[in-house]
Image 1 (cartoon, helix red, strand yellow):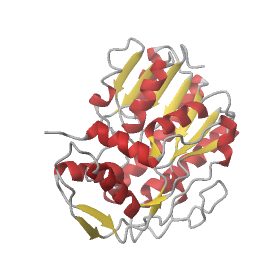
Image 2: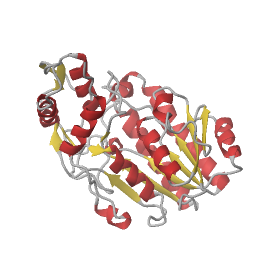
Image 3: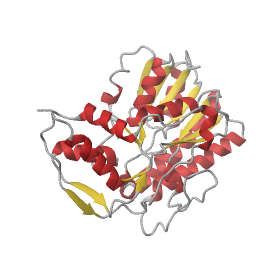
Length: 329
């Protein structure tokens, strides 16, 4: 269904976006990427840059003028995947205003673009949209709980994703063909492992750099880590004709593990690598992030409509990631 389709991917130079771009190009789509390269990298798009069906526009998703440039490349758009956001947990508290502006204004502008072009719209939301909800698994209808913003601004991301969903559902009510995807803790070789990255990549990067690993609290927080290719497949299927406007899909593994268990799995994989002589770093205990949810498990019942479930186990994915990023002297 993507052959010859004019597809915009906002945030397409980021971790999730670049994998989606490659997949869309393989399916014959004409792909335009809009990215300001704040977190995205040109190296993520290395395999796409020379493809005649690919166009990169370095710009701001919050600016209508930059979206109009995207619309003009092929005289309109058929599908918009809106992934652009300021991700990385530390940013949520430190750059709360920027996080809110990018999420909310970017979503409003891209919804307007979809309405101008009569394009199908796929919003990348997040399980963070549920805030500190204790009801598990996370499912539509669960309470979305956000704590006092005077204490911390962690929920600048989750609460603005909640409002992104509100705006998208409003556009659906007005006739836009739109779907919502919530990817759960996607990981893979291109995931950023710096201080503002995500935990799987941070742990691996600490091993490569011979730096201590820090567990937040006792490491009992659980997550449902989902391999990047499985997540990309979820986005693709959510945009297909199998799905319907108004559908919401939790794209996440059912293998729920604690952060402490994750650390032990990663250490086991590295220690079994006969070619790795770097040793294992020390494990220290540190304070957790403000508003960090104790559990995160997706309800994937609705995914039967698009025939999606995670195929790659956490052990398989971690092994593939290590094999891709390790440095052997």
